[in-house]
Image 1: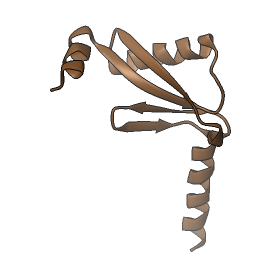
Image 2 (image 1 turned 90 degrees about the horizontal axis):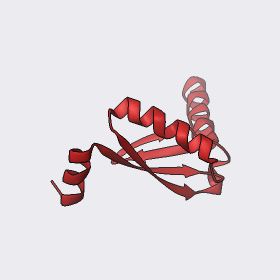
Image 3 (image 1 turned 30 degrees about the vertical axis):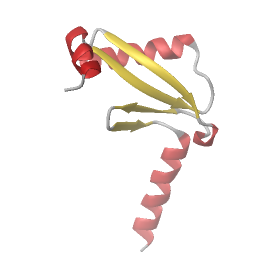
Length: 88
């Protein structure tokens, strides 16, 4: 285990890249932090904001090797795949 991971495990913190099309408000960031603290049972969440205008709207969370995609681009991609799968 790397030093940084060991420190995070000890203090129960989580580093999360949050990728959005536009900067999120502090209220939105606080709500996301609160949900992540509850879901992952940690006392601290460090959100690292990244702007990617290609997402159109919504956001993606990257937690280690896990990606939670709540972006418009991701939803459109999923819908496209569902349509293609059902028409073939």
